[in-house]
Image 1 (cartoon, rainbow, N blue to C red):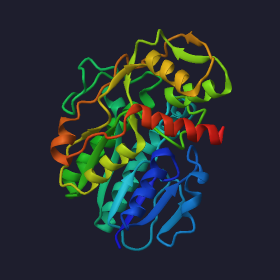
Image 2 (tube, rainbow, N blue to C red; image 1 turned 90 degrees about the horizontal axis):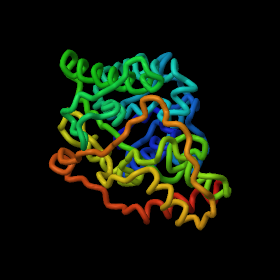
Image 3 (spheres, rainbow, N blue to C red; image 1 turned 135 degrees about the vertical axis):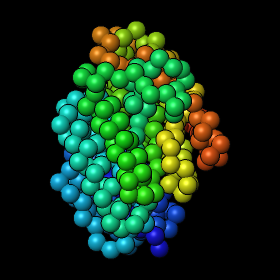
Image 4 (cartoon, rainbow, N blue to C red; image 1 turned 90 degrees about the vertical axis):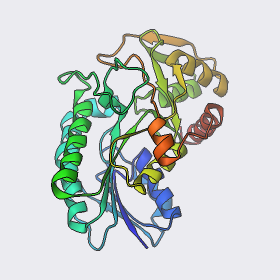
Length: 310
């Protein structure tokens, strides 16, 4: 049985990855300091013999006994609300945390996969975004603590590959949604759903014409699993290329929840991207991957989960 270490494993994406790798017959070591993760996300897994939870802060170091075959580094605040509330922790997770994860992979002679983000493209001047695009990031803006932490993490990952010969992969994750997102995490879909279910006004920042491309979580983790098993080491976009405005998404959520909430508009946040859409040609070619879950199916499952947990 192979062993995978998943940092940030009690978070939204991390917990889904823990489940997937258990289904693939891996022994899973879940690492989380629970800053933004939630032990409830992994509660059903704690009784599994092949699952181990270790509360550790990867910024201070990373200790995992026994053999390790794969390290997935997903530990970081990932929503604007979180990384603006915890800016130093976010920067350190991407710098010192990445360093400790890479050192663990080297020591264990394991493969390493970095969770990067579409935020490395900033407010893009190229549309849709391809992996060869270097981005348009404000290095001192309020979002920079996340954007630049991930850009630094990518650079460090590639340096370890070149200098230490480490087997590395980088996934650039585009907007993802699904069960276990926190209602107050500040991202569009959980905001819209929780406000709609509570009958509160649905908040849109700006005029709502900014676009996003939303990928259901099961599709995303399938792409990450495929990447982890590949020999490809350049960054790979994983996301759903179906692009829509945030106003369109708010209307869809309102209809799906049967809510009578009205839409309200607030000032556009600093450095918020105006458009976001992945070019997934590389993922289709290298990983034979593409999204399968349609928006209606994915949103229905997400709304059902929120109904049960709000």
